[in-house]
Image (cartoon, rainbow, N blue to C red; front, side):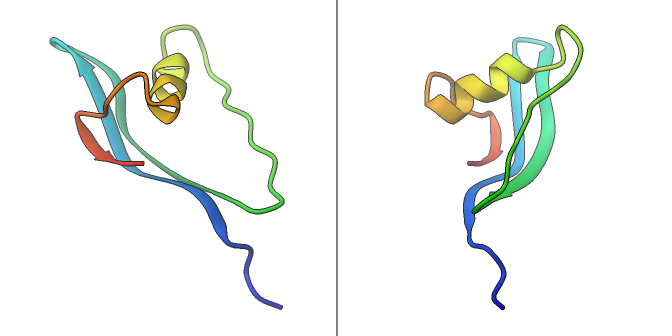
Length: 64
């Protein structure tokens, strides 16, 4: 049986706003037939990551 294909790949993505680092080098793959939840405390970069995935923000480093 083959491994499910990757639908979304996030590779070492970082986002800074001035001197504040909102997202720091996150990497993950979301594959076919997987469920994904983005959990974390307030101010940890969840919304910034989602905004980058949607194309509203551009990563300073890395690749989506």
